[in-house]
Length: 270
Image (cartoon, rainbow, N blue to C red; front, side, top):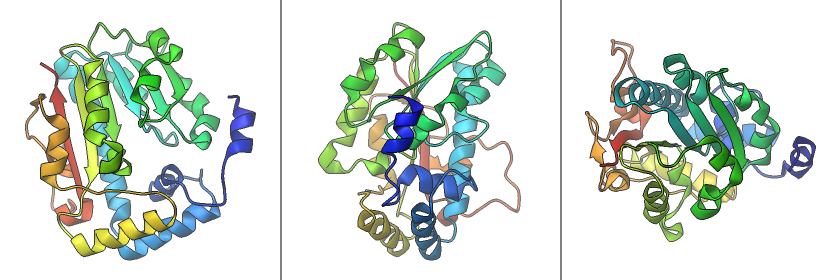
């Protein structure tokens, strides 16, 4: 699909989670329908902007840790969302200039802006594929993926704020397992996932807003998020609230756990 085709295929009649996330981050790549839905979420959960910001910060820290401390040079980032600098490849290549990153998303608007994700360092490489996490085999079989990633060498699977859009009926744990099964020993899973654990009533309202907008969601408990890491060696500090995973610094201005409401973790495949 070309970028012009993508622009024609964008559905502006209902909100989309990627464009709502862009609004939470202060971006400009969303439509009025997305803004209205996002503002309904913010009315129910004013800290959604904190959650989005801390999710992004976790991705940056996890990427740097995997590059510096675990020798990772390849990433598969699914549910990329609308590009927001620094993007994952910019973070990775700031540590290891030869890093290779494959981005994947199923929103035509993300495809429209995908050229932002192609600005790799000279030593590294990036590409974008239009794919859906609910069809992991098609994603793994995409020729663009094979052109950039060597699946005989460790790959970091990056699933940031994605799996709560995959309900239990869609087999989220099976999807993650199939993706990890395709990756060799030494690969990693970096995952963040919104949770109702700290404020169930508020997160029920958020669930209702997304569902009524046509986007089913399932926010999960710490125990349920930890299941995504079954069989992996969790890095310290385990599955923890986003701002508490390897923080650069915690000061008196740090958000509360309830404001962040995001479980995060990184595991290494034995």
